[in-house]
Image (cartoon, rainbow, N blue to C red; front, side):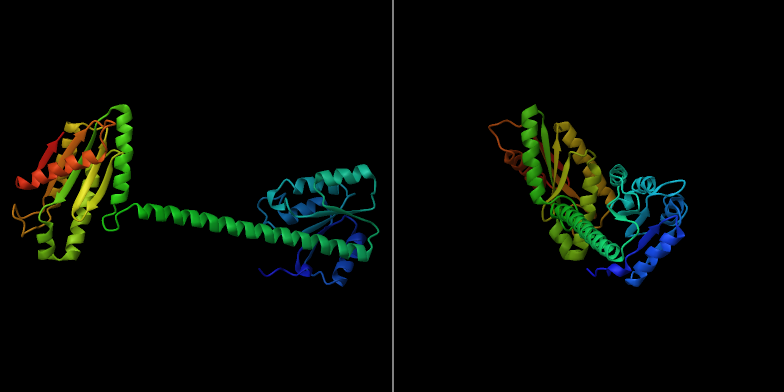
Amino acid sequence: MNSKPLEEMSILLVDDSRFSREIIQSLLVKNNFKNLMLSGSSAEAMAVLGVSTPQKEERDVDLILMDVVMKTMDGIEATREIKKHFRFKDVPIVMVSGVTEKEKLQEAFSAGASDYIEKPVNEIELVARVKSILSLSREIKERKDRELKLLKLTRELEEANKKLEVLSSLDGLTGVANRRILDQALSKEWMRMARSSQPISMLLIDVDYFKKFNDSYGHIAGDECLKKVARAISFSVSRPGDTVARYGGEEFAVILPETDGPGAQRVAVAIMERVGKLGIRHESSEIGKTLTVSQGVATMIPVDSKKSSALLEMADKALYKAKHEGRARIVAMK
Protein backbone atom coordinates (compact mmCIF):
# COMPACT_ATOMS: atom_id res chain seq x y z
CA MET A 1 0.00 0.00 0.00
CA ASN A 2 1.41 3.39 -1.05
CA SER A 3 1.13 5.77 1.90
CA LYS A 4 0.26 9.38 1.24
CA PRO A 5 3.10 11.71 2.37
CA LEU A 6 2.21 13.59 5.56
CA GLU A 7 2.67 16.93 3.80
CA GLU A 8 -0.05 16.01 1.28
CA MET A 9 -2.66 15.06 3.87
CA SER A 10 -5.53 17.52 4.21
CA ILE A 11 -5.77 19.90 7.16
CA LEU A 12 -8.77 22.09 8.01
CA LEU A 13 -7.88 25.16 10.10
CA VAL A 14 -10.83 26.72 11.94
CA ASP A 15 -10.29 30.06 13.66
CA ASP A 16 -12.39 33.23 13.69
CA SER A 17 -9.26 35.37 13.99
CA ARG A 18 -7.85 36.15 10.56
CA PHE A 19 -4.49 36.98 12.13
CA SER A 20 -4.31 33.60 13.91
CA ARG A 21 -5.34 31.75 10.75
CA GLU A 22 -2.64 33.44 8.70
CA ILE A 23 0.05 32.79 11.32
CA ILE A 24 -0.73 29.07 11.57
CA GLN A 25 -1.14 28.81 7.81
CA SER A 26 2.26 30.40 7.19
CA LEU A 27 3.95 28.04 9.65
CA LEU A 28 2.39 24.97 8.00
CA VAL A 29 3.20 26.19 4.47
CA LYS A 30 6.76 26.92 5.59
CA ASN A 31 7.03 23.24 6.59
CA ASN A 32 5.73 22.03 3.22
CA PHE A 33 2.11 21.26 4.18
CA LYS A 34 0.27 21.85 0.91
CA ASN A 35 -3.33 20.69 1.37
CA LEU A 36 -4.83 23.36 3.65
CA MET A 37 -8.45 24.52 4.03
CA LEU A 38 -9.32 27.64 6.07
CA SER A 39 -12.59 28.47 7.83
CA GLY A 40 -13.41 31.63 9.77
CA SER A 41 -16.17 30.09 11.90
CA SER A 42 -17.57 26.79 13.14
CA ALA A 43 -20.55 27.14 10.82
CA GLU A 44 -18.29 27.71 7.83
CA ALA A 45 -16.18 24.68 8.81
CA MET A 46 -19.21 22.40 9.02
CA ALA A 47 -20.42 23.72 5.67
CA VAL A 48 -17.00 22.95 4.16
CA LEU A 49 -17.18 19.42 5.60
CA GLY A 50 -20.75 18.99 4.34
CA VAL A 51 -22.22 18.16 7.74
CA SER A 52 -24.56 21.16 8.01
CA THR A 53 -25.87 21.19 4.42
CA PRO A 54 -26.82 17.68 3.17
CA GLN A 55 -26.99 18.92 -0.42
CA LYS A 56 -23.36 20.03 -0.32
CA GLU A 57 -20.69 17.59 -1.48
CA GLU A 58 -18.89 15.98 1.46
CA ARG A 59 -15.20 16.80 1.87
CA ASP A 60 -12.58 14.46 3.26
CA VAL A 61 -10.12 15.78 5.82
CA ASP A 62 -7.25 14.14 7.71
CA LEU A 63 -6.86 16.66 10.56
CA ILE A 64 -8.86 19.56 12.00
CA LEU A 65 -7.13 22.36 13.92
CA MET A 66 -9.94 24.02 15.90
CA ASP A 67 -9.89 27.24 17.90
CA VAL A 68 -11.78 26.93 21.19
CA VAL A 69 -13.14 30.46 21.65
CA MET A 70 -15.25 31.53 18.67
CA LYS A 71 -18.45 33.55 18.24
CA THR A 72 -21.86 31.92 17.80
CA MET A 73 -20.57 28.34 18.24
CA ASP A 74 -17.33 27.65 20.06
CA GLY A 75 -14.82 24.99 19.04
CA ILE A 76 -15.95 22.51 21.69
CA GLU A 77 -19.56 22.54 20.49
CA ALA A 78 -18.39 22.38 16.87
CA THR A 79 -16.24 19.34 17.74
CA ARG A 80 -19.23 17.68 19.36
CA GLU A 81 -21.37 18.27 16.26
CA ILE A 82 -18.71 17.05 13.85
CA LYS A 83 -18.12 13.88 15.86
CA LYS A 84 -21.80 12.96 15.55
CA HIS A 85 -21.09 12.05 11.93
CA PHE A 86 -19.68 8.55 11.49
CA ARG A 87 -17.21 9.44 8.74
CA PHE A 88 -15.45 11.91 11.09
CA LYS A 89 -15.34 9.49 14.04
CA ASP A 90 -11.63 8.77 13.52
CA VAL A 91 -10.61 12.20 12.20
CA PRO A 92 -8.42 13.86 14.87
CA ILE A 93 -9.46 17.32 16.08
CA VAL A 94 -6.77 19.36 17.84
CA MET A 95 -7.88 22.33 19.93
CA VAL A 96 -5.74 25.43 19.37
CA SER A 97 -6.38 28.16 21.93
CA GLY A 98 -5.04 30.37 24.68
CA VAL A 99 -7.60 28.90 27.08
CA THR A 100 -5.79 26.64 29.52
CA GLU A 101 -8.35 25.98 32.28
CA LYS A 102 -8.43 22.29 33.14
CA GLU A 103 -12.24 22.18 33.10
CA LYS A 104 -12.33 23.65 29.60
CA LEU A 105 -9.71 21.23 28.33
CA GLN A 106 -11.54 18.29 29.90
CA GLU A 107 -14.74 19.43 28.20
CA ALA A 108 -12.91 19.60 24.87
CA PHE A 109 -11.53 16.07 25.23
CA SER A 110 -14.98 14.78 26.28
CA ALA A 111 -16.42 16.35 23.12
CA GLY A 112 -13.97 14.34 20.99
CA ALA A 113 -10.80 16.41 20.77
CA SER A 114 -7.57 14.40 20.37
CA ASP A 115 -4.98 16.94 21.53
CA TYR A 116 -4.41 20.54 22.53
CA ILE A 117 -1.95 23.20 21.30
CA GLU A 118 -1.58 26.40 23.27
CA LYS A 119 -1.53 29.88 21.71
CA PRO A 120 0.61 31.70 20.83
CA VAL A 121 1.64 28.79 18.63
CA ASN A 122 5.23 27.62 18.69
CA GLU A 123 6.40 26.50 15.26
CA ILE A 124 8.42 23.49 16.45
CA GLU A 125 5.61 22.27 18.70
CA LEU A 126 2.94 22.84 16.02
CA VAL A 127 4.82 20.96 13.30
CA ALA A 128 5.82 18.12 15.62
CA ARG A 129 2.25 17.66 16.89
CA VAL A 130 0.74 17.87 13.42
CA LYS A 131 3.19 15.33 12.00
CA SER A 132 2.72 12.97 14.94
CA ILE A 133 -1.08 13.11 14.76
CA LEU A 134 -1.19 12.79 10.96
CA SER A 135 1.16 9.82 11.11
CA LEU A 136 -1.05 8.07 13.66
CA SER A 137 -4.17 8.96 11.68
CA ARG A 138 -2.63 7.54 8.51
CA GLU A 139 -1.70 4.30 10.28
CA ILE A 140 -5.23 3.93 11.64
CA LYS A 141 -6.75 4.56 8.21
CA GLU A 142 -4.40 2.08 6.53
CA ARG A 143 -5.19 -0.53 9.18
CA LYS A 144 -8.91 -0.04 8.66
CA ASP A 145 -8.45 -0.25 4.88
CA ARG A 146 -6.62 -3.53 5.34
CA GLU A 147 -9.36 -4.80 7.64
CA LEU A 148 -12.05 -3.83 5.11
CA LYS A 149 -10.17 -5.59 2.30
CA LEU A 150 -9.73 -8.65 4.49
CA LEU A 151 -13.43 -8.58 5.38
CA LYS A 152 -14.32 -8.29 1.70
CA LEU A 153 -12.03 -11.17 0.80
CA THR A 154 -13.48 -13.24 3.65
CA ARG A 155 -17.01 -12.60 2.42
CA GLU A 156 -16.03 -13.42 -1.15
CA LEU A 157 -14.43 -16.64 0.07
CA GLU A 158 -17.56 -17.52 2.04
CA GLU A 159 -19.72 -16.91 -1.03
CA ALA A 160 -17.37 -18.99 -3.16
CA ASN A 161 -17.49 -21.80 -0.60
CA LYS A 162 -21.30 -21.65 -0.56
CA LYS A 163 -21.39 -21.87 -4.34
CA LEU A 164 -18.87 -24.71 -4.26
CA GLU A 165 -20.95 -26.52 -1.65
CA VAL A 166 -24.05 -26.15 -3.83
CA LEU A 167 -22.18 -27.32 -6.92
CA SER A 168 -20.73 -30.29 -5.05
CA SER A 169 -24.25 -31.36 -4.11
CA LEU A 170 -25.60 -31.31 -7.68
CA ASP A 171 -25.27 -33.66 -10.59
CA GLY A 172 -23.11 -31.88 -13.13
CA LEU A 173 -25.26 -32.80 -16.13
CA THR A 174 -28.87 -32.60 -14.99
CA GLY A 175 -28.68 -30.09 -12.13
CA VAL A 176 -30.63 -32.28 -9.68
CA ALA A 177 -29.08 -33.67 -6.50
CA ASN A 178 -26.25 -36.17 -6.91
CA ARG A 179 -25.92 -39.65 -5.44
CA ARG A 180 -24.10 -38.41 -2.31
CA ILE A 181 -26.92 -36.03 -1.43
CA LEU A 182 -29.47 -38.75 -2.20
CA ASP A 183 -27.83 -41.12 0.28
CA GLN A 184 -27.66 -38.39 2.93
CA ALA A 185 -31.29 -37.36 2.41
CA LEU A 186 -32.51 -40.97 2.53
CA SER A 187 -30.67 -41.65 5.80
CA LYS A 188 -31.87 -38.39 7.36
CA GLU A 189 -35.51 -38.77 6.35
CA TRP A 190 -35.56 -42.44 7.32
CA MET A 191 -34.51 -41.58 10.88
CA ARG A 192 -36.97 -38.67 11.03
CA MET A 193 -39.85 -40.83 9.85
CA ALA A 194 -38.82 -43.57 12.31
CA ARG A 195 -39.15 -41.09 15.20
CA SER A 196 -42.63 -40.01 14.11
CA SER A 197 -43.77 -43.41 12.77
CA GLN A 198 -44.68 -41.79 9.45
CA PRO A 199 -44.42 -43.48 6.03
CA ILE A 200 -41.65 -42.68 3.58
CA SER A 201 -41.78 -43.51 -0.12
CA MET A 202 -39.14 -43.79 -2.79
CA LEU A 203 -39.33 -43.79 -6.56
CA LEU A 204 -36.68 -45.23 -8.86
CA ILE A 205 -37.10 -44.08 -12.45
CA ASP A 206 -35.35 -45.54 -15.49
CA VAL A 207 -35.37 -44.09 -19.02
CA ASP A 208 -36.51 -46.94 -21.24
CA TYR A 209 -34.04 -48.20 -23.85
CA PHE A 210 -31.70 -45.28 -23.26
CA LYS A 211 -28.68 -47.10 -24.71
CA LYS A 212 -30.56 -47.50 -27.98
CA PHE A 213 -31.43 -43.78 -27.82
CA ASN A 214 -27.72 -42.88 -27.48
CA ASP A 215 -26.79 -45.25 -30.29
CA SER A 216 -29.42 -43.71 -32.59
CA TYR A 217 -29.10 -40.00 -31.80
CA GLY A 218 -25.66 -39.62 -30.24
CA HIS A 219 -24.43 -38.75 -26.76
CA ILE A 220 -25.10 -35.02 -27.05
CA ALA A 221 -28.76 -35.72 -27.76
CA GLY A 222 -28.68 -38.28 -24.96
CA ASP A 223 -27.42 -35.67 -22.50
CA GLU A 224 -30.15 -33.23 -23.54
CA CYS A 225 -32.69 -36.00 -23.12
CA LEU A 226 -31.58 -36.67 -19.53
CA LYS A 227 -31.73 -32.94 -18.73
CA LYS A 228 -35.32 -32.75 -19.96
CA VAL A 229 -36.34 -35.86 -18.04
CA ALA A 230 -34.73 -34.48 -14.86
CA ARG A 231 -36.70 -31.23 -15.25
CA ALA A 232 -39.91 -33.15 -15.86
CA ILE A 233 -39.37 -35.17 -12.67
CA SER A 234 -38.52 -32.04 -10.67
CA PHE A 235 -41.64 -30.21 -11.87
CA SER A 236 -43.74 -33.20 -10.81
CA VAL A 237 -42.45 -33.04 -7.23
CA SER A 238 -43.85 -30.00 -5.46
CA ARG A 239 -42.93 -30.17 -1.76
CA PRO A 240 -39.71 -28.54 -0.48
CA GLY A 241 -38.86 -31.57 1.67
CA ASP A 242 -38.88 -34.00 -1.27
CA THR A 243 -35.59 -34.91 -2.95
CA VAL A 244 -35.00 -35.50 -6.67
CA ALA A 245 -31.62 -36.98 -7.54
CA ARG A 246 -29.74 -38.69 -10.32
CA TYR A 247 -29.23 -42.24 -9.12
CA GLY A 248 -26.78 -43.16 -11.85
CA GLY A 249 -26.63 -43.30 -15.65
CA GLU A 250 -30.19 -42.96 -16.94
CA GLU A 251 -31.79 -43.66 -13.54
CA PHE A 252 -33.30 -41.07 -11.19
CA ALA A 253 -34.62 -41.33 -7.65
CA VAL A 254 -37.23 -39.41 -5.67
CA ILE A 255 -37.51 -39.47 -1.86
CA LEU A 256 -40.97 -38.58 -0.51
CA PRO A 257 -41.09 -38.22 3.30
CA GLU A 258 -44.48 -38.41 5.02
CA THR A 259 -45.95 -39.97 1.87
CA ASP A 260 -47.99 -43.17 1.82
CA GLY A 261 -48.41 -45.58 -1.10
CA PRO A 262 -51.31 -43.81 -2.85
CA GLY A 263 -49.48 -40.46 -2.50
CA ALA A 264 -46.33 -41.90 -4.04
CA GLN A 265 -48.41 -43.44 -6.86
CA ARG A 266 -49.87 -40.01 -7.66
CA VAL A 267 -46.38 -38.53 -7.95
CA ALA A 268 -45.27 -41.42 -10.18
CA VAL A 269 -48.28 -40.91 -12.47
CA ALA A 270 -47.55 -37.17 -12.68
CA ILE A 271 -43.96 -37.97 -13.69
CA MET A 272 -45.12 -40.47 -16.30
CA GLU A 273 -47.52 -37.93 -17.81
CA ARG A 274 -45.03 -35.07 -17.81
CA VAL A 275 -42.32 -37.19 -19.48
CA GLY A 276 -44.88 -38.26 -22.07
CA LYS A 277 -45.73 -34.63 -22.82
CA LEU A 278 -42.08 -33.98 -23.65
CA GLY A 279 -42.70 -35.88 -26.89
CA ILE A 280 -39.04 -36.84 -27.29
CA ARG A 281 -38.67 -38.98 -30.42
CA HIS A 282 -37.26 -42.47 -29.79
CA GLU A 283 -37.57 -44.46 -33.04
CA SER A 284 -35.39 -47.28 -31.72
CA SER A 285 -37.56 -47.92 -28.64
CA GLU A 286 -39.23 -51.33 -28.57
CA ILE A 287 -42.45 -49.99 -27.05
CA GLY A 288 -43.28 -46.90 -29.09
CA LYS A 289 -41.92 -43.94 -31.05
CA THR A 290 -41.46 -41.53 -28.10
CA LEU A 291 -39.39 -41.66 -24.96
CA THR A 292 -40.89 -43.40 -21.92
CA VAL A 293 -39.81 -44.26 -18.38
CA SER A 294 -40.31 -47.20 -16.03
CA GLN A 295 -40.84 -46.61 -12.32
CA GLY A 296 -40.50 -48.65 -9.17
CA VAL A 297 -42.33 -47.32 -6.11
CA ALA A 298 -41.66 -48.44 -2.54
CA THR A 299 -43.32 -47.33 0.71
CA MET A 300 -42.38 -48.22 4.28
CA ILE A 301 -42.85 -47.02 7.84
CA PRO A 302 -39.28 -47.09 9.19
CA VAL A 303 -38.49 -49.21 12.24
CA ASP A 304 -35.27 -49.50 14.19
CA SER A 305 -34.67 -53.06 13.04
CA LYS A 306 -34.39 -52.01 9.39
CA LYS A 307 -31.97 -49.70 7.62
CA SER A 308 -32.79 -47.09 5.00
CA SER A 309 -31.21 -49.36 2.40
CA ALA A 310 -34.27 -51.62 2.78
CA LEU A 311 -36.44 -48.96 1.12
CA LEU A 312 -33.94 -48.56 -1.71
CA GLU A 313 -33.80 -52.32 -2.25
CA MET A 314 -37.60 -52.51 -2.37
CA ALA A 315 -37.80 -49.68 -4.92
CA ASP A 316 -35.10 -51.38 -6.98
CA LYS A 317 -37.07 -54.64 -7.00
CA ALA A 318 -40.20 -52.77 -8.06
CA LEU A 319 -38.30 -51.07 -10.90
CA TYR A 320 -36.87 -54.41 -12.02
CA LYS A 321 -40.40 -55.84 -12.10
CA ALA A 322 -41.67 -52.85 -14.13
CA LYS A 323 -38.95 -53.35 -16.71
CA HIS A 324 -39.45 -57.12 -16.74
CA GLU A 325 -43.17 -56.72 -17.34
CA GLY A 326 -42.70 -54.58 -20.46
CA ARG A 327 -41.47 -51.12 -19.34
CA ALA A 328 -43.32 -47.79 -19.60
CA ARG A 329 -45.20 -48.61 -16.43
CA ILE A 330 -45.32 -48.12 -12.66
CA VAL A 331 -44.94 -51.00 -10.22
CA ALA A 332 -45.45 -50.34 -6.51
CA MET A 333 -44.35 -52.45 -3.56
CA LYS A 334 -44.87 -51.98 0.16
